[in-house]
Length: 368
Length: 258
Figure: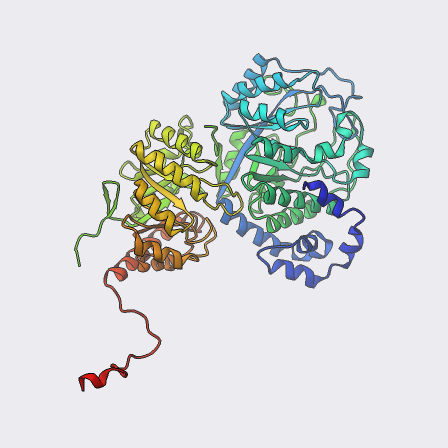
């Protein structure tokens, strides 16, 4: 039993027909429940739910306060390599893009980690492109060890691995894993991943489960909005999170709602998720999955992120650089994976969180 | 009725029967005034949240010296991890008290009673004052008592759920049966529910979410303090049992005295 069974169960399901048939009564029924079914979740994702946005937001806020309190976790990424053998047509790191690629030496990883930790950040995400020849397991393992010296939590956002490899990195000190499916739609998945190991839809889809079995205490998933049909992507993301909750009860499940940003040498986003639907989906996720952490990256604009603090998110990134070695140099945005939108410093984001009546939390985990 | 009414944990005496927590506050600066308003003398803090190098962000800096720190093992998935966290807490200067939380269900945060018992057995041997957080279970409570736990902390309902004492029938059996203090922990969402636990004969309650996430945590702390005191006084006065009808005097056996 894996999430693939759920994907197969919905193959051929007429999403558009279903969404068109949702009634106002269906939405009201979903809003009156404490435990939502798949059908309720679909109703809240549909356009029919849009007039109920304020009610959804108010419920989402209440649930988030209850389960996570008046706190906001903080994190930031370190990109250790932008070598990549995949051809994902929406990504600035794709293999057909020619730019000077780089990979940090362990000494440089140390410098990046030290500089980032000096901003107060204690939870870090380690990122790479997919190029196992350039960034083999032992290099990743050593990088994790270096980062563990500076951070209380090290999360991985790297290419999918098998359970044993995940186990090695978990043992080295990485405690969390993020794998975004990008799109749950198999056809679109094939169209946007033209070359490389990433073409294998199922290998990626089941990576979070392999990670959970390998011992990661927290697993984060999500779709990249800007590729497939937005309601379907949100629906599958929600089911994926719920599947992981049900099958790996000792794992904290997290969800993100990344929206595609323009990157050098990549396609423009399609099926745009606008701000209104973004908030609708985020509150629908909260109502369907009250205990799931929701993080928002610096892909989003500062003024939008500030508003989201009250609506169900639990973690914000801050002071981020999305290029390799970015903390040690003046950022060259041409070679970043995507353009960041919120360029505020950690201190500025912290002040914003406090002004909103929340406590910024730098450390919420320790490897013992 | 005895005049002194202290809560005794390990060999320490406490006047307040309200334990509080440090999680979920909008700002750590609310903690000292909340402690003062609530009279709480014991506050629990997750070791994983402590960052000694963090200056003002270090949660310990906001806890007054006279308050007893009850570090907890939040984040532990096994007895072994709980034991390691307890040892680290003691080395970090957090004292000998430890609240054991071993949780393997991230959705409802249900405690793992088996692992909790194992951790209790080990930590008592190492001289800790052990307060295990458990799913209410009478047999387990006897075993924890045998193991040397300083109290048992059965949950009223899931952490943060504010649903009150849903496990009341089992907690009543535990209160009726074991000698060590029973501290109702988790699920208490309103002062009236805290009072209910105390009226039942619980020795203390632990309240965090309801105080920390209220619009005014300081006033909420004061309200819980009053409720805990009222409930305790009511329990000690042995208020008459409830009855739905007036008791006629010996309708069946009165003739014997006739």
